[in-house]
Length: 296
Image (cartoon, rainbow, N blue to C red; front, side):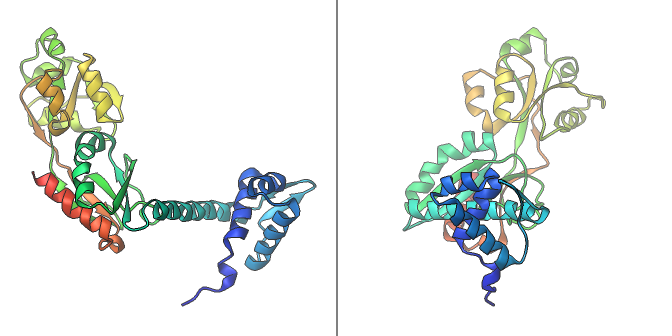
């Protein structure tokens, strides 16, 4: 069913509205759009007439959004951003396809990025755009085709493809281990521990798995594995780190297992994507490839 033209205003009208709503000035919007003030005013008036809603309150030489206009401006701004992004992606890769992928920062840096060359070589028509995200989001409201998800297989409105499990190890610098005389799990109770904000119960779980009585665990907080790993290398404490993300540091001896007790995480890595994008060619190709890579 075709939507009434009344509810599909032209891009020119919406651009004028967005510019005025953002700058709070017809004059500033006119300068930005390279139009006259009267032309911008006419576009705003036309849009209000089409919608049958007053979008601005006029006060002498100034304008301000009505309550309805403020809510409309937020949605229109996002819609125009998505149109612009789609156009940019098409122009950058007119003969292939673009995959917008949200990644976890350290996973993307340490695991995915070094392997991406193989995918791009096998799929020369595909462009991948990467953006870092630490938490789930709504695919309906964000111009992302897929995301790397770590956690339980739950993401409302999305399908998930299993990638890999994960083992963590209590890692620290060799000097820190020797200086604190760490040789068994209970020795970690009295040393500085480094925590990930996204995994607040990890240390409690590790202690429980290793027979150390439950207790309140304190220490420095980090929002990314990379910074926690660097802090551990610098001798600031012990961090529970995924072994596959610190392979180089372990090989070089920058980090060591404070005690040789790995813990398998209850959560897993998944590729998440909206069901309606499952057959999108770049996503389908990436999904098949990343599953194979994760299995190596």
